[in-house]
Length: 237
Image 1: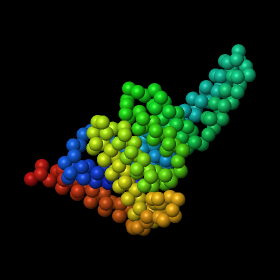
Image 2: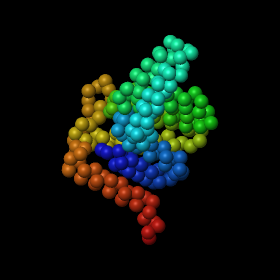
Image 3: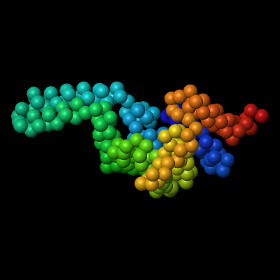
């Protein structure tokens, strides 16, 4: 499924379940739910979450900035020769990297910086920092699309936020799991328990096809209907 459909379905269903069991829904809970709905695709550079956090234009601007930095080091750092030349070459090599590779490097650097220096934002610095570092190194639909990913994300939320609210880790784990269940409807499916080759695949749709769009739209409508039943029906009456 597409990123926007994952966002609507996983977030809508998760919040509806929380509403049914009378869990308190706050802005942090909604935010964690929405991020978790997109999180399994964080290892894909074109995913909705990654493209919004680190857009291609930003990476292109960064490449130009690195070229400028390399030139500055070469021409104005001659007093430190030959180190200025070495650094200029290294910066130049980084600027020539493919967009995906450079984005991954930026994700790792930001993640490490949050973990080391983001104490003001505890516990979010550990959560976001760890995700950026780990997911920058993972192949698409690899570990993030397994039960290990669900358990790892839920555990990270639990140990980071259980002192604040149990609803946060429940919402995050459920929303993440719903993303995987949605992907299992496609003709590609997922491998939930690697290294086992068993693939969870219902083959109801293929992303980008007319049938796929029809099935995807149907689940989106069902999600809106569920949200209406749980949260809005009593207002309309």
